[in-house]
Length: 338
Ligand code: X2X
Image (tube, rainbow, N blue to C red; front, side):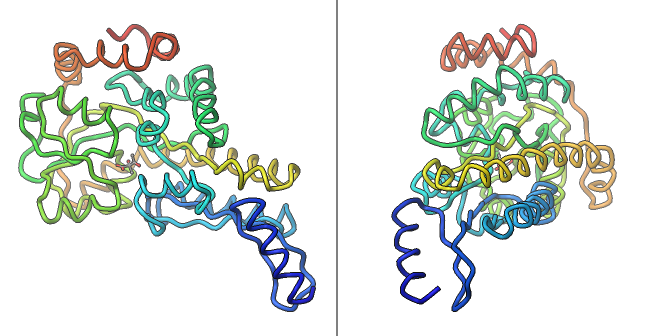
């Protein structure tokens, strides 16, 4: 390929879609696609381990025509900024909590309703079933392409620096970081806490400098992002289940030839299933591991927290905000909530 054709190719690709062309300097290799995928967890998190494997598989199965480039640890920016970039096509893919995605697709926060999911079998039945389909349709309608399988973030636990959280009363005026999402703010306000919205990119330093006293995240995140270095206590509240949707910019993803797109989708969905298993395995050892890092654990009674949310009108409010169709799908999976 001459320099001129490769340049022209670049221009054409640049116009056709936001995905970047691959072209070799002075080589005969035809152009392909680079898909940049951003996420907020460290490389050591199973999500990035499985994404890396998927990237290798995709490269091999497309004979090098599609390169999935993984950017862990918010290297391309904080979640809410990267979401804008994925919408514009400057970044082609990201994994994102449905609750943060709800700033664009309100109903995507519904899996985060406090104490709705009792266990993992219920989570996967709902998210791989009708509720998940409903949510993917809403995401698609907003102009993004969600992969079929949602990745596990996990059941969330509350960590703190000053004192343990044993009951809802301990959350009164507690300065807690929450991700940028109305549902999170609403839920911790209902507990009487003082929530501050902060992107995950800033969480470690916010805890270190005591801008906030605590945060909440699944154990796999607390471990891999070394949150235990800046927190003392961990209350096993399991107050919500949270997952990562893998979304793509529609123009960029549609520009990938259909046969290659199928390879990408299959690899990513299979990787998500393996990542769920990784987290399940890790969940059996993480508490002991984190105790080894001097994090102190306690297990509060979830009933008191749930009652507090009920009394504050949290369920009634969110039932209205999500609408009857979505709420019915959630309740069909988890049972009556309010
Ligand atoms: O921001 C968080 O706390 C994290 C990593 O769990 C999410 O992406 C929601």
